[in-house]
Amino acid sequence: MRRPPLWGLALVLPLLVSPWLGAADARLRVLFFQLRGPRSAGVADPVLLAVDADSLALDQLLSPEERRSSPLWPRMGAWPWSRQLQADLAAAVLEQGAERVVFNIVFPQPSRLGPGDDRAFERRLAPWRDRVVLAAAYGQTDQNGLNQAQLVKPIYAFPRLGLTALLQSPQGLTEAIPGQGWLAESLEGFPLPHPQPLAFAAAGRRAEPDPIGIDYPGPAGSLPQVPAWQVQQQPAGFWRGRTVLIGATAPELGDQLETPFGPQSGAQVQAAALATVLQGRGFQGLPLPLLAVVQLAWLALAIGCLRRSGTAGSSVGWAFGLAATALLVSGLAWGGAHRWLPVTALVAAPLLGGSTRAWGQWRRESRERAYLHQVLARRVSPALLRDILDDPGPLGTQLGGSRARCVLLFTDLVGFTPLSAELEPSALFTLLNRYFEAIATAVIEEQGLLDKFIGDALMAEFGVPRSRGDAQEALAAVRAALAMRDRLAQLNRELVAQGQPTLRQGIGLHVGEVIAGNLGSSQRLEFTVIGAAVNVASRLEGLTRRFPDHPILISGELLALLPPGVEVDPLGCHPLKGWPQPLEVFGLRGLGTATAAAADGAA
Image (cartoon, rainbow, N blue to C red):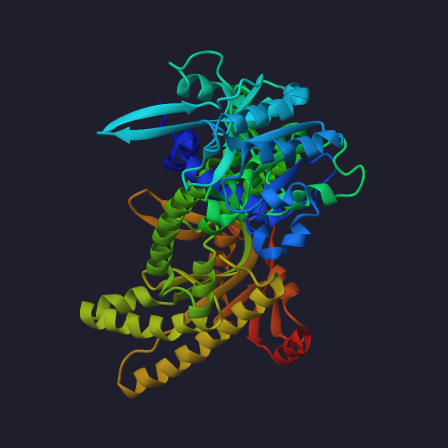
């Protein structure tokens, strides 16, 4: 059974551990809030009646005469305020048509001003008992190493009670309203009925099964906010139909919470939670079946895309493209559908899988480049070698080949067999090396490929593994052949001066289709070409024995690719072994005006 590739396992891993990536998801949700920025407040948003710093310092801001102009101002000052004053604030908005009043202030103990203050609170709000929501608090304390939970309820028996507890992210950001699961687990052991979260209690609804993310409208002050001391100074109709939350916002009273938009008071956070529930804007995760479908679909897409990447660079490109797509889709789901996706896992999966695949591809490509450098370093020009190493294409370490069109060059020494019988082995090898050094350089200089040395013969190609076009490759091959002729002449002059026998060569040139690729076994590969065109070039080289005055023979097909002005002698049509019809053959004498014509064409 075939094992899955390592990059496939790396791709799946982040999706498997997505439940443990909550901290990273929380950071990304903060980023989404900051990218979205503040939203405009609407008439359906709750109004925060704020016990702010000015209301607490009213005795310093207003003169005694100014304070006596309002029945509420003389009683405002340092915190805590009397329960009767707080009830009067609530009654003031309820009398002006407010839909409901929600206290974010817990009253766990009798008033410090005595029973009369408590009776005044209940009596003042009695007409609106069903429209007033009081607050309960939940907390945990450590007593002698024992963690104890506490549920603190108000002393007043109002029918609507809400829990102020909110959930925090691993970074300490207040981000969600508890769901029924959290309530059941945390309040287990406390007498029933258990209070609903404050926002749901105010809306007259039960909490959702899972937590609901708070849709913060923006930094502190984004929601409508009225200082407590200005409650009676609002225009007519301002309070009608509104939900009013009463709570402290003064920094000196503490209760500051961290949010995606910076620190905000607990009352401002509760107002954002209340707006979230009233407007149905809460963020929720996907149900498990739908989440599984999304993850499997994403996995299938990532596998399909990464399988298309043939190189390390393309794998990296696909990985970052998929990660950016995951981030974009998660942001759209967050902002448009108010759905939490496991964004960290969706982003990390293609990055981890793609980088693992790219690493494997890079290692393979490095091996291929090292192999190609070893094989081709002395067979092609440095410029062509750099081009091949930048993009090996079909020249990797795999067996097999592909069709290509190129110019074939064969050269062989004439009458070398008798000469080899006369020379000592060391002298023979020295002579051959001097000969090959002279003619091989001509191939390299013209961007050709030195295919192989076979005894005293040399085989070269122009147009593989990279082609510059048939015409350019044909001209390069002809220039190389003429350079071989000239350099052999120079070598012969040196041999004559040294009293050694001279050499004579034959060169055959043809153009045609071949199969180019790696030939051999997995232990030893050699890049070469095979095909009928190879045999034709070899037969042309052998035909030079019949035309001693023409050591370079070319085919009519090759001549058709050369620019005008090439100097040739037509030698007629000749049958070649293995070729279906006689081949038109020409003896090459020189380039003539072809070099100038080729230069003009290139310009």
